[in-house]
Image 1 (tube, one colour):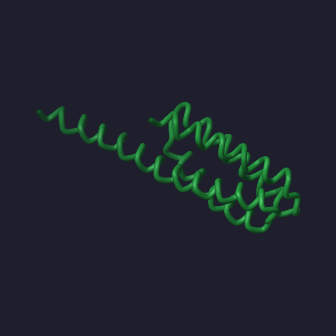
Image 2 (cartoon, rainbow, N blue to C red):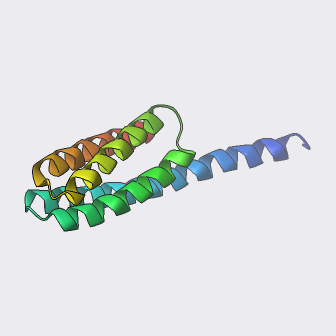
Length: 114
């Protein structure tokens, strides 16, 4: 019985970190989709605002993610940073393409966590 308590505690910790990653992943995906929509509307400054929020949540999710989802989250973070860089320079088309790549990777990460 004494050995079961640490086992259950470890299991609970693993499950809670997965939930934590999923919450940030959901927020990152929401903001990345908003960034994509703003880019398609030609609004570089709004794209940058949403891409920064998506990047923050993506990086938070990456800290606790493991395996396949982590690879996609890291790739999404790179794409979102590219979107921010291009959007800051008012290059709407490449910023939108980068935001779209970020959305694709975040969706793949979300699918891999299920």
